[in-house]
Length: 142
Image (cartoon, rainbow, N blue to C red; front, side, top):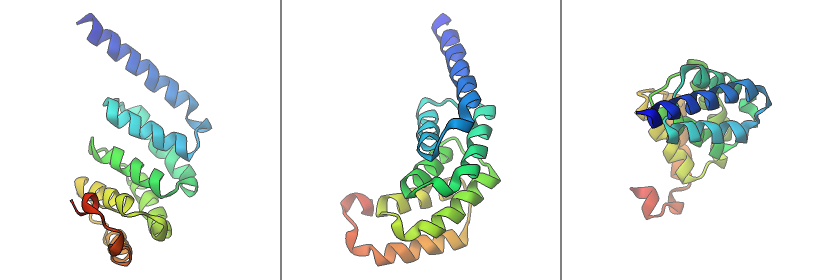
């Protein structure tokens, strides 16, 4: 029981430290942080809100992989932030021709997992996937 309590205190301290440094993080840092939080299960409301706000501010810095990884990480806990989702959707549609098959697949899966029906985004992913159909490998087909 002590270890579990100590772990909670440590995770809370990490979350607080991340929030305090949020304004200094770039797009790659934010993408890595949100992915790490998802893997650790460190879903603290204040931390999630801070990451989403920082992402919206820096969305123009995000590349296809960081967009895909970020939205995937939020899909796992079903955390929904309207501004974050809108910013990711808009940026994804702008960069869709630079997305690889895996990033498109992860993005489509993430929106589906969160029960978000973003028809323009899904249409853009579908069009781009059709253009890259010859690049499909067995993993992408599964």
